[in-house]
Length: 175
Image 1 (cartoon, helix red, strand yellow):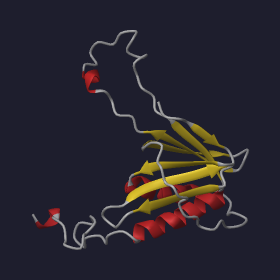
Image 2 (cartoon, one colour; image 1 turned 90 degrees about the vertical axis):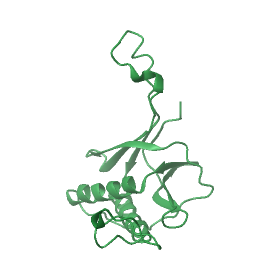
Image 3 (cartoon, rainbow, N blue to C red; image 1 turned 45 degrees about the horizontal axis):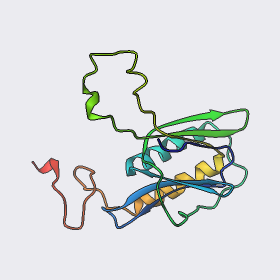
Image 4 (tube, rainbow, N blue to C red; image 1 turned 120 degrees about the vertical axis):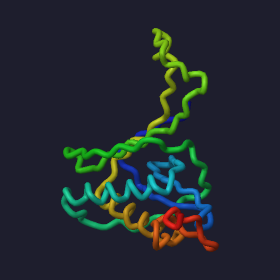
């Protein structure tokens, strides 16, 4: 099982990508004290998280001071792949709480779910979890960085909106 983390006061919270457009690998990276955690994400997860954080910020007071956009810290060694993401608000601490859960693939042997025994629940594999308590300023910086990442990718096809590579792509609208 992978390691779980809780950062109540992260100093570093950023999305980044490594590679050429069309071949990029996306990461979320955060740190607290001397511990740096890098997680692998899908481009759509980064984009959706940034959009959702934008809607959350609409309901919160504007941050007092902006946070400068950060870059990924080398070496980038992802601990695990992000599956589910949850977002909440800790009103008492004036923080946005993110919970990122590890993507855990089911065993192929677990196809037969008709037999639920007492041992069934003991065999369920739970993934690791990263719980972050970020400020609105950190969320705002994450959104800005994510927008920069998205704009650096391949341009969208004018017909279907899917990424269009240098040599074009197979557009479903032309079928």
